[in-house]
Image (cartoon, rainbow, N blue to C red; front, side, top):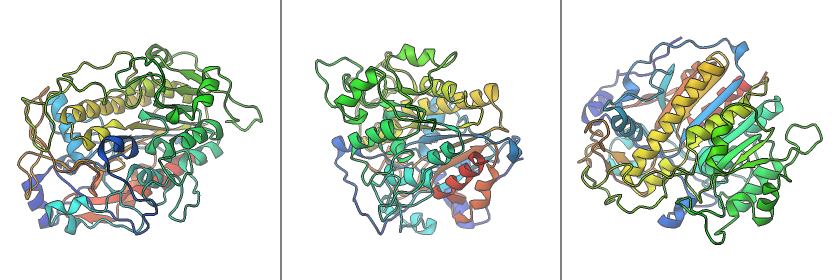
Length: 499
């Protein structure tokens, strides 16, 4: 079944697409900003994720046909989140990889559309957004509120995790899956207790309570697979330090020592017996778990302080700023760290553990450092992170076709928000598209912000119940056409996971 969601009946939309088919900002506000987000830059790397950049013309292309599944077969949900990933981020990654504007691994999904991400009390007004270049910078969400909306179907305030604006806990999709006897997993390329992964597991009034959040994820949740950065003994280049910098991302020193001894973990499956975590750290361990026998419960903490690759040494990267050139900024100038797993390797290991459950599973995979690169306007690191995320999506699709089916598994690809207000060169007051300089070369692009924006973000879906998202796309943007809201994903995922 093929569903195309790209209207072109509004003249303003056509005019704007001609002008700039690459940039879509979005406005979102929150009347109940119980804990306002700070925006200090270096430290804010750890504190906040960024919104996605503007929507590109890919969304106007008709979807290719792919079979959807009878509801009775549905049992798995895999949600992939490019943190901070906007449509121009997608376009830039595609141009660098292939020299084509629409070569993403999700171009053939049944559903290709846009999604709003505003906070509780906020809104998205496409006419207002497109009436002025700077409007998109106002009222943006953060990753905690966005993750809560995706995981719980509930809008909330900035920094809130799994709670509503009254700070009351709300059920998340991981808990829904576990009630159905399914396995659950969380994988991220940033610290495991950061906002997006945490928003799918915990109930906490502030995303900044890293140690408390990590303890809840590790000791109190029923999650079967948990993977992410935050190793206390390694720096951002994957080098062993003389002494640990911080244990906050892994729940404190005592808990870390217990994890190393495989001596901690609560009852994940409800049989009254504690299920201790098996801890893995080396890249070889992640690679080896992509096939073959697996432990019952897996905690993977790569030997890296924060992000898998984005924060490695910057020497030789070139100049950063709102205006960059292909001569000064080139991806992969600094060699990748070879001692940490890729997001693909982590995801394949997680799938190999989770698919042991015949009842099915839920898995969230986050390409979290797209956001971190966007906060710093790092054009080369953005390309690296976007390419890594796209490869992960492709590997998940291959897994579905080799080990499951599109009748059994719903795959969703989206973002929590846009970050960096990424456009093509020479934008403002026009919206110019990211331009093609050929495969392997940095596209022509510009940054206009160092934080999140209120842009619509991309949403792709394939598999059982994907058509429900089309039915929920009741709003219309003058450029992007019909769009859903981030709270719409929760009931769709729930319909797959519940018997």
